[in-house]
Length: 314
Ligand SMILES: [Zn+2]
Image (cartoon, rainbow, N blue to C red; front, side):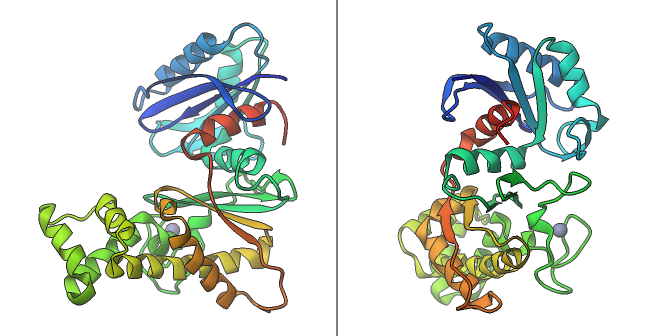
């Protein structure tokens, strides 16, 4: 019945919660992230922990975006928070005497939460792909998070999918992220809007919005069953299924969990992803079919995963 505290430091807000052993948040708090001031962020986390702690908390998990070392003591680099080689674990432990402090990459923590309490909980090996502005995710292999030898493994969005493909922010070309992220869906939608035909409703939505399509426009058209929007989602799903088939060759998960904004399309996304996956899987027909699921914990996954990792349940 041990409660633990999870803190999820995001680019715009810090979310915290007291989490019970079943993954339920029993007390929560949030506040804006003091942008780009590393010391103020540490201070805000310490205050949030002290505010949430009723005196019984022994373990605190703190997660953030960025590259963490394999020992999970130092943040090499965090893009939005101004951390460079930050000894985060030691700094937090010093300010939270008597508490067991664990730090983790936020995508790993969210994946861990989904594995323990969400869509992956009946399985031992899981690949979670989170489709937002970019493509991220986490890998659980035989009940353990896969972090890699240097701590920066499971960068699912930057596997090469298309040789000499579109340039990516990581400096390479043809990454999964360029074909499967929410921004890729918008690119497909704009291209179809330009060609007319079934793209006309997308073009109309774009014109009504002053020439700029966003995710809400595409979602609304998807919900109404618009053939143009559905064909754009199918393009993304085709590429994503191809990527998942390649992940399978190395990881061989029992379940794929898809999260992020685009996953709200539900079976409209999952069905064509599964279809494409099966067509791209080596030795297809002779490999058991994994489950395909939409992530369940959504906004709270980071806090829940942070607390559970702090309890030492991995
Ligand atoms: Zn890339």
